[in-house]
Length: 130
Image 1: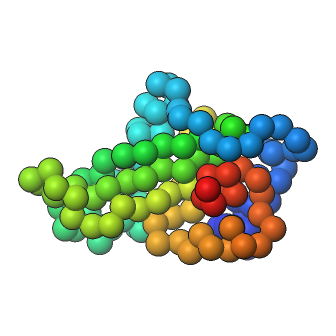
Image 2 (image 1 turned 180 degrees about the vertical axis):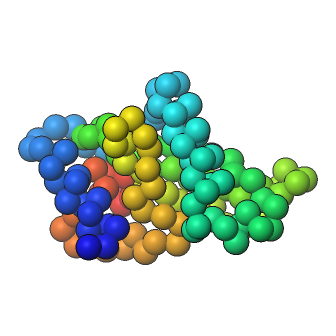
């Protein structure tokens, strides 16, 4: 099963019926936890290895939390060089909170168009299609 299919299935289970839609900014605690986990994934995830080899560091520039399900977040991450300038395109990540850990469910470079054009879990549509 693909990573997006797994996260979509989880979203359906967690989202339930009804509820709020849209996105909200993170609380201070959510921002701290998300930034911590993105930094960790940046250091160990093979998907970021080429960027790490360039000596770039990550900076989380925007976080959005789903109003319908607080377990889902979208994060923009910039790769910054040693002079503090953005060196690559901003990466957009989809995160899911599982057992107190923010995990990358939708990684950099993932085509998000299917989320917006095919039936998809509401939290993902709220995060990536507006």
